[in-house]
Structure formats: structure tokens, C-alpha cells
Image 1 (cartoon, rainbow, N blue to C red):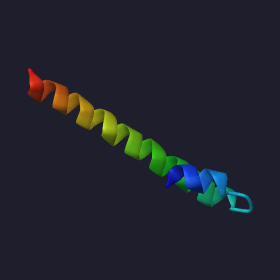
Image 2 (image 1 turned 90 degrees about the horizontal axis):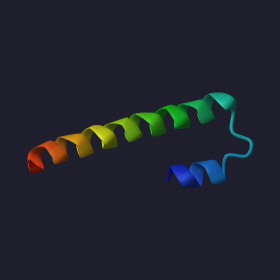
Image 3 (image 1 turned 180 degrees about the horizontal axis):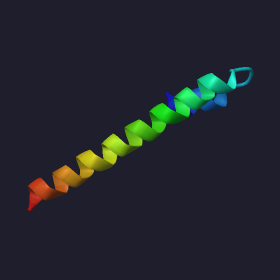
Image 4 (image 1 turned 90 degrees about the vertical axis):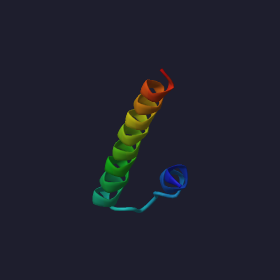
Length: 43
């Protein structure tokens, strides 16, 4: 969905694009945390 948002972002205000980027960073951080926890559980 984020890829779609970037490909179709023409005309979006900067504030909305920043919100999309912030959400992407938040999701990326959560994914890293989950991956770390899964690796810990595998031990």
C-alpha cells in the first residue's frame, strides 16, 4: 500500500506525504522488533 501511495502521490500536500513516511518508519521499526523477538524465541 505504501508503494501505491508513493506512486500516486502527485498533488498530495507535503504534510500528507510526511505522515505516510512517518507511518512507514513506524512499521519498519515494529517489523525489526518482531524479527528480533522471533530470533530470541528460536534460541
